[in-house]
Image (cartoon, rainbow, N blue to C red; front, side, top):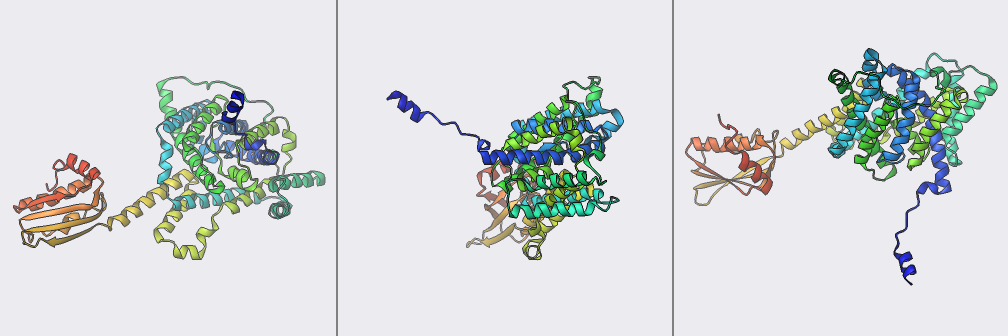
Amino acid sequence: MSSMLSAVTRPRLSRPSWLSPRVFRTEVLAGLVVALALIPEAISFSILAGVDPRVGLFASFTMAVVISICGGRPAMISAATGAIALVVAPLAKEHGLDYLIAAVILGGAIQVLLAALGVAKLMRFIPRSVMVGFVNALAILIFAAQVPHLLGVPWLVYPLVALALMIMVGLPRFTRVVPAPLVAIVVLTVITVAAAVTVPTVGDQGELPNNLPTLGLPQIPWTMDTLALIAPYAVGIALVGLMESLMTAKLVDDITDTHSNKTRESWGQGVANIVTGFFGGMGGCAMIGQTMINVKASGARTRLSTFLSGVFLLILVVALGDVVATIPMAALVAVMVIVAVSTFDWHSVAPATLKRMPLGETLVMVTTVATTLATHNLAIGVVAGVLTAMVIFARRVAHLVEVTSVLDPDGGTRIYSVHGELFFASSNDLVYQFDYAGDPEKVIIDMSRAHVWDASSVAALDAVTTKYAARGKTVEIVELNKPSAAIHGSLAGTLGAGH
């Protein structure tokens, strides 16, 4: 009897969803598609950073594998990225690969520290309009990155791209058993190899490695001078990487209607960069385009696809490099075009939406997109969008403070009532809302419908009381809520108001 009871009360271990044959197949094929798409991207970013293609390819392998275990957002792809390449390129050019690797390791450590300090909580301050601008800028950048592959190429590239697009648009209407991007890649590769046509291939992007990455330390002098040299780059790696990763995680949350652990994702990115540095990689962060391939185009939802994307990448470039080198770039360009089109939020630019949307919201979105396109840096675009949103919000709220007054029936007291949020932007005009000369000897300021947020508001109230005192009149500030009373009590009379 006791054994039966223990069997009933014993908690059942949840079975990983990827053990389902259908989910397992989806995850495996998604990982393969992402791995194929990662190869030319990693090579391109290596060239952008000024390092050997092996550095970017090995970074993509280690980032994907480690983040699949440590990350907080299942199915999100992390690898070598253009944003990180832009940060480290000057360091690699001026001081060499070893200093770059040291900066990556330090950047990863900073990310772990920022995660412990709760940096992920800052995501709540990113408005929806910035997210929309982020997504639209991302789509434009993905599309723009494909344009060079379509210029100055043999004419056969264009019908091949068109064929791949037709496969990816048409095949899902009949079956989703096999990801359409994978079918497009295989079909175009077979056609170009069988017909022996000469078109740009993955092999033309750079030499693929023929050995496994090895563990080691960067050969640098371990001194304070070295730390001072690499620290600015490490901070850049940490901030840019976290911002892109957390924004991408939020985007995947919206797409999949699930919630991710942003704090875990933050320190997971740090651990992945530390491991990547020790294996000689260039570092990285969440890769938005490949994540969209994995989540939207291929339907992946678990960590297995992320893990396998890294494993398949290593197998493909080391063991099957000769085969991978024959894949036409036209196939991968078509995949990324589909990703760009599906990523762009077309509803946000529809005339009906723009007509209903407040002008400030549209301005924030446009600022985010424009800044990102001008700098080719999504992190800078997001910061610009958030700052614009803050300014617009401050201006809007600044006009929401209202002061009304009534005269006491006995005529000896004027009662003012302040309505709204008092902070640096809204409290500037507060001092002009009172009749210092015409009011009776006693004045009461009722704050029951107001909230004091900062020192500027306390200084404004001090200025009001000082002006009345100069005329021999007394002022009583009443009905402050508890937080407002705390800040007013600690600062009132100490800010030099009226001087």
